Length: 238
Figure 1 (cartoon, one colour):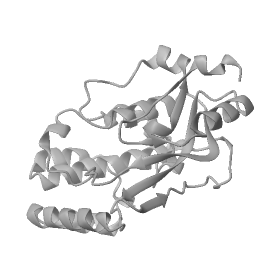
Figure 2 (figure 1 turned 60 degrees about the vertical axis):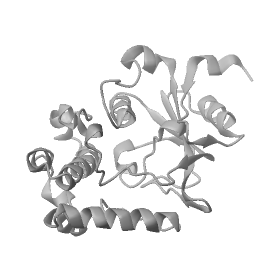
Figure 3 (figure 1 turned 90 degrees about the horizontal axis):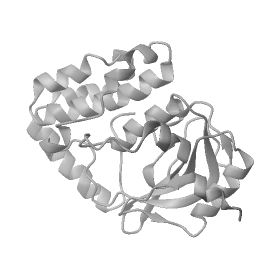
């Protein structure tokens, strides 16, 4: 190979794993689609010891290799960019820097949004990474510390007025944050996020959850976690 990798930065979370073809897939796509600044490999999600879930992306065929037309729309159900499956050009790091260390959660989300708003993104056709979601608790959390400093979604309020996909994408996370605060009994913080959500972007299931008391939601969370251990998973946000 040429020394092309010297111009790129890859990421790997401690719990995730790369397959042997991970870096080769990046190299091949970078060579074919050099205009992009961020490249994303396909991945599977491991939710139990023997259960791996394929992650389909909206408007991106499973065999597609190349530029991503609408990053935010394609990321509404499963993210196009997942930390351990991302490679960025070093120009991005020089321009934006690294992850915002002041954030307690979703530093990667903040980073991908900033990149996607300014730069071209490409995706490979290869599944090269296993995202470890075993016993993960990334929704309906009871841990208050992670909410002390979250991504400032409202920094994009003006941009989302003319970007329908971005608006819907941000509302998904506003709803998630709001629901977490609701479970913690922090009504004021919950409503603060919810007031920026377009009502048409919240489905019936989620509206029902906001009507339920916290103790019932905590019970539902425990049930959801137990089901995941048996290879059954679901989300209320879509």
